[in-house]
Amino acid sequence: MVIKIINKGEELITMDELISEIKKTKQVDEAGAIFTFEGIVRGEENNEKIKKLILSVSDSEKALSEISSIAESVKQKFGVFEVSIVHYIGEFYTGDSLFLVCILGNHRKESLDALTDVIERVKFDIDFKKEEIYEDKTKIIMSGG
Image (tube, rainbow, N blue to C red):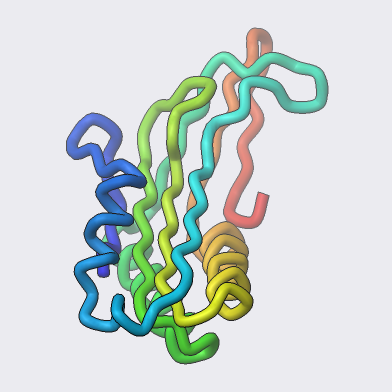
């Protein structure tokens, strides 16, 4: 299981690397599904062009602990074998990866449900601060936005 919050530029983990790592899990022989999600930066919001996005978290250690708890909870709730989550923080531009999730499960239904649960819980439960920088304004969105 890979659970990380990474400052952009300090380390790069790709989706291919997450998939390769999750396939090393001992239950891979029992698995029939891998589901992934890659959240990227939008270049436009409400017909306005976003110049850049700054994503931060007030307490990285607390957020990492909470993300780990989400991963463990999802494993138990949906009976999936493995959950890996990588969330980047820092300054980003259109198309940059922000959020990677990889689920290894026995069947597609519970694996897809687990993936959806991770995405929603990380978005709404972790104390991220998102600053969308436009040409003439900055919009600040706290977790859940």
